[in-house]
Length: 329
Image (cartoon, rainbow, N blue to C red; front, top):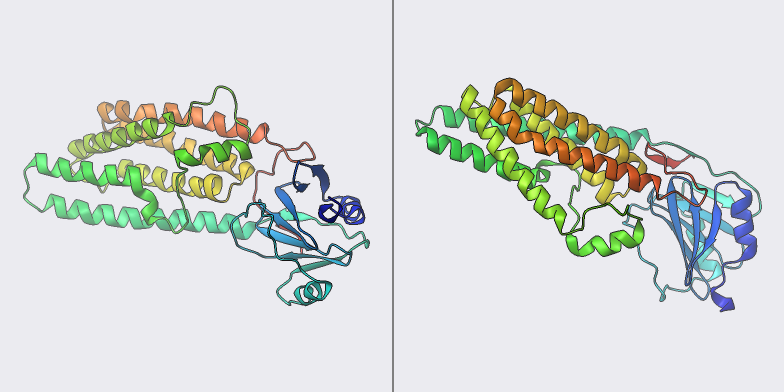
């Protein structure tokens, strides 16, 4: 219907800026910008444009006027048919909000540019370092308690096994970031959002694989503890660092859904697991053999993440940037 039609002059202005390309779907109009996906939902007198990749929103006046780009930190919303209608006066009030960091007058032809978001990169590094520090501190505290406990060796090994099984399954408890794992029930929605390669394992396989790897992480760490008699050891620290880096990757890929940055992140996870296998092998061949399947699986997962990134380009046909991006002020 005409009342839900994205205004041609608005689309032309955005395309002229060089930062957007217009694509049509059945019930929405999508404007895609390199480095983010911008979804446009239509209502009787308002269109709301939300940037998924960079968590920023554009509000477009249906009768012409201005475009607003603000710093919304909300999660990507779904298209809704019952959006509140906004009058021209409402739009003017919103555009006068001092929190807006960029206002473009329609037809001016101002170019919207992106730049590397070093603040977000710093957030990832700081969160990962903090998590590693906390986990090492707690593990050393546990190690001191075990060594001086006087428990029989079998009980000491049981405590170490439970501690590392917990970390293998719930290390995100210590992460400052939201490192939630994807649920199997949500995989259908994820497949609708992103293309998947034909060789990707079925969703049901992932919890089975990761549960098996969690057990191997716990058993291999017990083997290291049995050999060196303590958890205050570089090999154990390599395990904790690997888990923390994996949690940061989960935030990037599953929560923030940054396809490009996820490729860099999974590369860091891969390097950390190779280092882990090397460190465990140095201490005990048994420990190294137990943890080696983890490196095999993460190598496959790395190829999977890279493939998903390549087969899900933006409207300009180019993959998302590898670094997190933000709109240049």
